[in-house]
Image (cartoon, rainbow, N blue to C red; front, side, top):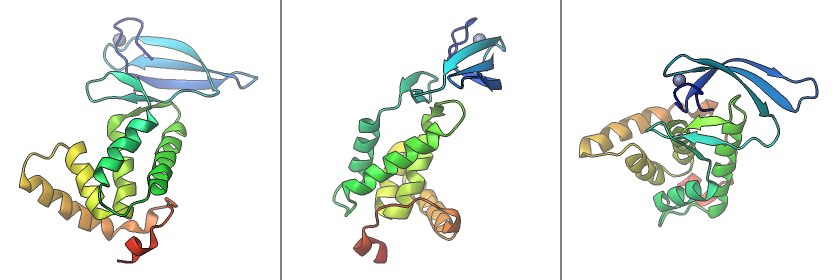
Length: 170
Ligand SMILES: [Zn+2]
């Protein structure tokens, strides 16, 4: 939601109230940049999901784009396209369930990493190297260190992926 005062795309929701028929949501918002407060009425059905990019601009969530970036990371790995589909579904669903239908590209990246971590460590590191813009070997070492820590901490992970059994057992 663009600020009506300064056009900044990011605002925080102060209050959210659904209309009686449940079709619109009234939101009291405050601009993150200038603090201007305004009210929006948003349709609560089929809300598009917006990605807030690092530079603050917004764009519509693009599933194809997400799939493409993941399949690049999974090249020559035995990760099925079914698994990538499942990750996309999961990411999209996780983002839609948030109150605002806006999600940062950072959050999406972290969700994808969480899923890839479970599926294929090599794809995970590849995706991380692009997503986190690794620039030195030390970046890889640090990521691998965190990867090991995360691997010890997997119990709360609930994503139900189509398992590539040979891969998971290796
Ligand atoms: Zn503003």
